[in-house]
Image 1 (cartoon, helix red, strand yellow):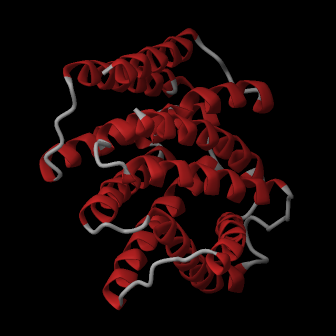
Image 2 (spheres, rainbow, N blue to C red):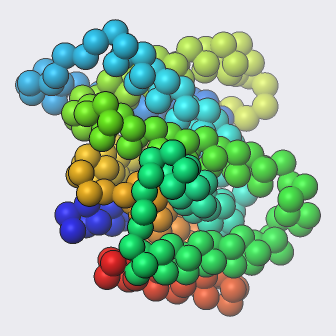
Length: 288
């Protein structure tokens, strides 16, 4: 199925995005990094906007995309702050718990019904995410009392809401995938820029200072490519957002490897077992 292949492509680039994001956020102010990442993606989309026949949207449709941008900004505000303060091998598995929320919403509100094989793959993947989170408790102390763990989970929940909303926009409202990505990216820049000027700029000399790193631009580029694959996958009529989300969050495999190789994070047998489980889950989903 084409949509599964596209979802796997999104997962790969999302893994590269996670690694570069962690590097960009190390000892750095969060809001400027977040803003520049969004700005990079938006700037790269400008030539596409100019030289392609992008469908004209109504004011109502623009309002729907503003809501999408607000949801993602809220999700990023929590997850970026958590990533800057915790190991990538901890935050990525928490972020990978997104399918749990997405599947519940997709089945409840979108009438999705995955096949038996896909259910098996989803179950294996979700169990693996739980194992990964348990393994991470040794590195975070009191796991559920850690405010950044809670921030990561809340940001993940908002991201799941955004994922279900994406299916509504693409399959129910029939948005063109490219038009959605372009306008959503532009509104992200406006919203995040305004928040940065209000919350961070007046206090820019207090707390974490901003240091420009070229890797910040790579964050925006990797996310742009990952989102392109993702929107194209969801645009397919037979695509199930519950399955796409599980595949997309398999980026934890790449993020996990990046945490070990580039940031010297702890490995642990439970973490390795969880990564193997996620791969097995993907195989079942693909066979379904």
